Length: 440
Image 1 (cartoon, rainbow, N blue to C red):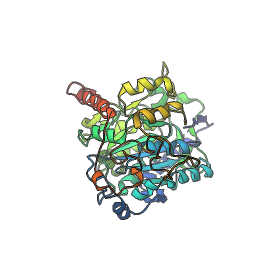
Image 2 (image 1 turned 90 degrees about the vertical axis):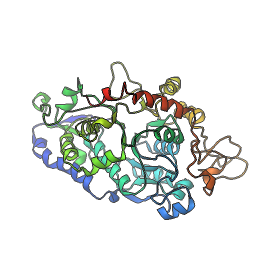
Image 3 (image 1 turned 180 degrees about the horizontal axis):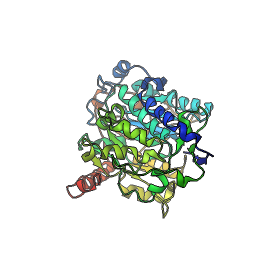
Image 4 (image 1 turned 135 degrees about the vertical axis):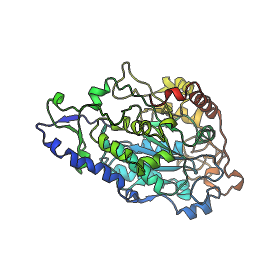
């Protein structure tokens, strides 16, 4: 996402109104989530999808599949093509997908994303892909990033499809396993686990992130997305560490259980809302909020796995952004056993290698290719593979566009990615490691 720096404002006028505008963050989460969706979902109603795809159950989830996932794929200006590619690499009919393109992106780019999604016949047959129709203005490192994630969770819960875990990704992420690999590995896990990288050792973040008080203009202005510090002298604009709860920090990328997602959205006690108000004036709040909610909740503090399941390469010492991954990082990505990696430049050659060797997918046929015509979302005859990632639902030429295959109901074809991921998960969840890495 494009970096928007911290603007400095003279005087304390923003401080005088910050409390009032902070309330907008909570209100935005409580609005009807259906307002986010466009005519939005590409495809027929759930009942129609069920008729076309007999392995979908009445609740819209994957009957016969052991687990399923709900994905948020976020993109900023220039990220429409990358978001569409990530969607294809992640796609599985048992999952649910919501795409959010920042409102700051030009209208042409929003139309392009709609065209890329609506152009895939399989999405329409299943009806499990949505685009946010009223996108949020998102400030990098601001609470509007957090607000967008929470709103997406509310939408995906309201849609009524079955899913077990919520996964937030950006258009610069990419999977390192197929969805069948992910399903197979997660099928052995308790459904209440939350993969949240976390620590209470705040270190340099105390002075740089926690103590400064900021205001995100995207909370109250329609066309300005900037973080404001109300005083030129930032040393006089600091707050002390909280005493009624303990702050935790970590990665902004998480895999959250459905139960925890419901807790964050509906909050059957007051903790999620109280912490949301606190984080509305915190720099890089997505790196704090879910960690702090989980670790201060009696119900969820013992359900955290201290990992985001991402492969990320950083400078030494770490800077604001991770390093871009390329072909030279391929071997380390595979050996990491991670489920996802970030960040990539759109169109980098290493993505083609991941497609070819890990996901076993190929690009669709070109218009000028010879041979039988095939839908863009189907396999390409004579091209040695299929457009979507390999799996039980899409493992043979042409099968992706021909859902009426009753013997494929709930079929999973996991591979080496599942074995690598399972070994890593077993190590994380071992008696030696699991408890001692939780919320300390």
